[in-house]
Each structure stands twice: as structure tokens, then as C-alpha cells.
Image (cartoon, rainbow, N blue to C red; front, top):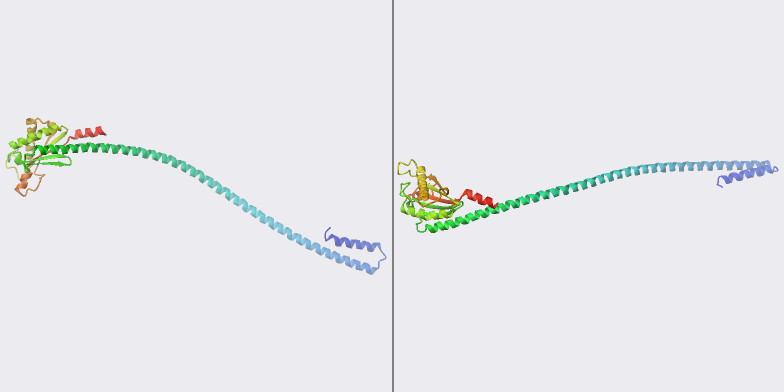
Length: 301
């Protein structure tokens, strides 16, 4: 039983008591009624307070429900955002795996390409080494030829000849005084014949070599007016050396080349008579036959 019900029940009980005992005086009856009215007012006031309290509590409950709904809304929004972020993470992870797979495929392809290139480079290096080996063999041959020529011509004075190893072969220089009668393109001196006789066996021992025979002059015009210029004069001297080697010493014409440079490739200055004497010369250049060298290199590679 509540606090509100107890006073009301007491009042009703009291009223019944007075009604049942009619002997009670009017004065007491009125006092009782006044007490009952007071109790009723108190009761009504208490009920009103409880109603207000109930209304307040209902308002609090509604506010709590609203806040709860808001929190639920926030939770739904956060859950949705979390789902979207997780979906993005899954998408990025998939892209990462795909890129990793593509990277591995590209890396494997690149490694294969690099391996092929490395193999090609190694092959080219091997070919270069083969070419160098062959060229070194020819250079060694140059040294050998140079030694044989120097030994063969050792009886000739230094102002009559020179033997030189150059980049593309061995060069023998025979100055005019050791080879031709001065002013003549065809008259070879006995000393010149001796020089050709010593040189010819060396040419024969190296059939893969070509001997380029070049005539040179100083810058004075030919003393014999039958020669139009030094170019013709130097070419004729070279041609006559080739003729002598092929006719008199049985050298294969395929090994010999004749050329004339006139005064256009002097060995030294033409300002002195000694210089002019050095420029009047025949040069025999021993070099590897281009075709033979090419065949040797192709065989190596």
C-alpha cells in the first residue's frame, strides 16, 4: 500500500465511524469533515507532485531514448565508414598482390633479357679477344719480319736504308743513292740489285703479306724533261722495282702494289741538300694481306 492510499483509507474509515455513531455531536462532525478536507487537499497535492515527477522522469526517458537513437545513428555511421575503409584496404591489398605478381613477372622477363644480353656481350668479348689475338699474331710477325730485314740489310749504311715497325706493318726505306742512278727511273745500281736480292726471300716467306712499293721525290722538278712531273717520275721508279722483283726474283705479282707520291709526302724538310737526299727514296711497306687477315679473323670468330 502506498503513502497516498493510507491517509485516504484512514479518512474514510473515520467518516464511517462517525456515521455509525450518530450520537457524536455536530461540532465534532464538522471538525472531522474539516480534517477530511485537509487530508484530501494534502492527498491531491501529493498526487500532483508525483504526476510532475512522473512527467519529469518521462521527459528524461525520452531524452535518453533520443540520445540513444543518436548514438545508434553514430554507431551505424561509424560501422558504415569502417566497412568502407575495410573494403578499400581489401582493394589495395589485391592491387598490391597484382602489382607484386606483375613485378615478379617483369623482373623474370628483365632477368631473361639481361641474361641474353650478357651472353651476347660475352660472345662479342670473345670475338674481340679472338681478333686481338690474331692482330697480336700479326704484330709478332711484324717484329719477326723487321728483325729479318734489319739482319739482311745490316751491311748497308744508315744513310742508305732504314727499317721501321709502324702501326700497320714494317717499312723498309731505300734511299736513292742505294738504289737508283740519280735522275733515272729505271737504272737500278748494283747495290740496289743486292738490296732487292736480300729482301726478296723475306717477301716469299710471308705469302700472306702485301708489299706496297711507293716512290718519293724531293720538291725539285725531274732533271730529265721527259718526265712531266715528280708524280710520274716516282710512280715509274716504283713500277720498275715491282718489275725487277717479279721478273728477276720470282715474287708473286699478287703480293706487290706500286704507287707514286712525288714530293707530296716528304720524310723531312727540303730546305737542305741532305734533306732532299732523304726525300728521294723508295719505301716498301710490309702489311698483312687484307683478305688473308679477314679470313683469319672470320675463322676465329
